[in-house]
Image (cartoon, rainbow, N blue to C red; front, side):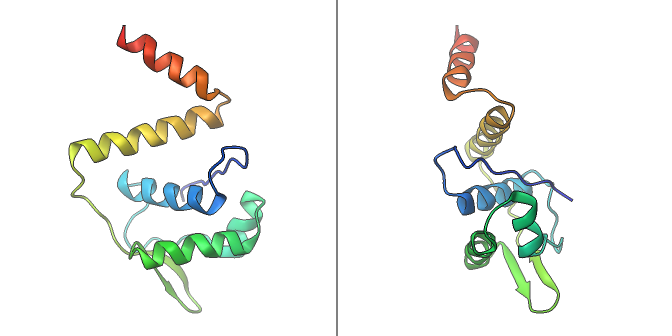
Length: 120
């Protein structure tokens, strides 16, 4: 089971962070077709957020046809998009890298400086 994280100080709404992580999990193969996502209340407790926030993320993912909710059973990964262009794959990896760097305690400035040092 994939572990989810949110950063309330990131400046990105929590529900959008959840959506992004689910999409990244699908893109990277960490979440497989028909895999069950944690129930809304369970994820809300795990992330220390309001259950309505998780429900909003799940509704948006369902609207985007990435998950499907089966009443009484849960929310499941529905769509696995494997036809990403090379640039889309790199964009998703960069998003994941930045998210992980922020979780590890790097500031945005430190991340930018590290990227610029790699160019030189």
